[in-house]
Length: 239
Length: 311
Image (cartoon, rainbow over all chains, first blue to last red):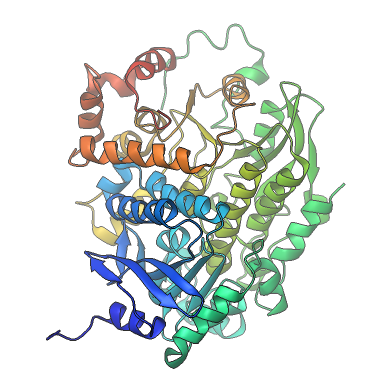
C-alpha cells in the first residue's frame, strides 16, 4: 500500500498480529482478526462517527451477519463516536429505535453465546457509546481515548455552575469530568490497554468471565461510585 | 395541547379522568395502580439521596426524583417506577439510576406480571454526568435481564419532559411503549439539536414541529410506539394492561424482523423532509389535519396505516 494505514487499521494490526481482514466501509469498520484463542469479529466506527439511523442500521446488519455466519464468535466493538447524530432527520425517523435496535442485536448475540468486548480507541460520547461500547460484557480503552457525556464548558453553561467549580470537582470526584481514568474509577472501563500490548490485552479479556453486569460493584471497589451497587442491593432486599 | 375530550369526564370518576400529564409522580402512581395496592421501596423517609448534588450546592429530592415499588394493576402484580417530572427534569443520576436498575433486576428474579416504567425525563443528569450515563447503560442491561426472564417491560411516555436522552434509547429496548399525544420520545431533544447545530436544523421554539417530529402520534404511526392512549389515568391504565401477557421474546428472529422493518422505514421515508410527508406516504389523506384529530379518530385512522415492526 502506498498510503499510510489509517489509525483504525493500524490499531487492528496491533490487536491481531496474526492477521486480520478488517476494513473501512465509510465510517463503519468491519471484519475479523486472528488471535491466539481463535477468530474474533470486529464491528466498529471510525473518524469520530456520529451514529444516526443509517449507521446504526448498517452496524446492526454486521452484528446479525456475525450471529448467523459465525455462531459464538466473540465480537470486539471498536469505538470512535462523537455520540448520536444530532439532526432533525434522524430524530424524525426515530434514532432511538435504531440505536436500541443495535443494542438489541448485541444482546441477542450475547444470549447466543457471543462474548462482547469493546475498545474505546478514539472518542466515546453519550448515546453513541450506549449502543456501541457500553453494551459489551467488558469495556476497555486506550489511555489517550476521550470518554464523556459532554464537554466541560457546555456542562457549565447548561448547569449554570462556573467552570472553575466543575474543574475543582473533577479533581476530587470521578463523577463529573471527562476521561478514561474517571470511567475506570466508576467501573465502566475495566482496564486501559497499552498500545504496545494490545494483542495481550485482547486475549486476556477473551479469557475473562462474561457473567452479569460487573460495573456497579467495580465502581464501588475502586471508590468512584460509592452508591450505585448498594442502592441496587437495597432494592433487591427491600421488604 | 388542548384537545377536545367530550366523552371522558362525564362518565368517569374525577380520579380516573384526571390528566397524567398534569400529575406529579406520586399522583400518577395513585391514579394508575389499584387503590391500596401500592408499596414503595426506598421511600423518601429513608433519605437515600444524591451525594453529588449536595457537593454542588443543588437542591436534593428525598427519593432522588424517582418512586419505585410494587403494586397491582387490574388485579395483576407489577413492579413500577415513576420519574418525578418536577425534580431536575426527571434526570438520571447515580441513585435515581440504581433504583431503576435494582427494580428491573428484582423483576428478573421475582417475575411479576410486568414492569411499568412511567418515564418522564431529559436523560442524563449533567450534575452527575458520568455516573448518570453509566447508570443508563446499567438500566439497559437490567431491562434485557427482565425480558430474558419473560417479564414484559412496559414504558409510558406521557409527561412534561417527554422521554429523551439515553432513556429514549432504553425505552425502545423494552417490550412495549404506550404514548399519549402529549408524550414525546427521542434521543436528542430540540434544544440540544438547536444549540449544537443551529436554529436552521431545529427550531426548538416551534412547538408544532417538536410535536409532529417527536410526539406520540408520529411515534405511533411509524411504529416507534406500540400503544396510544388519551391523557387520562383510566385510558392509560387500560392501555398498559392490554400489554400484560404479551412479552416479546428477544430472539434472533425478532431482531431480524425489526431489522427489516427499520430498513423499510429508511427506504420509504429516509428522504422525507417532514413528518407530514411521512404521514402522507403512509396513506393519510389529509396529513395536515392529523394533529387536530381526537384520540378516537386518530387511532381509528392510525391502526389502518401505521408501520408495524413485528410483521
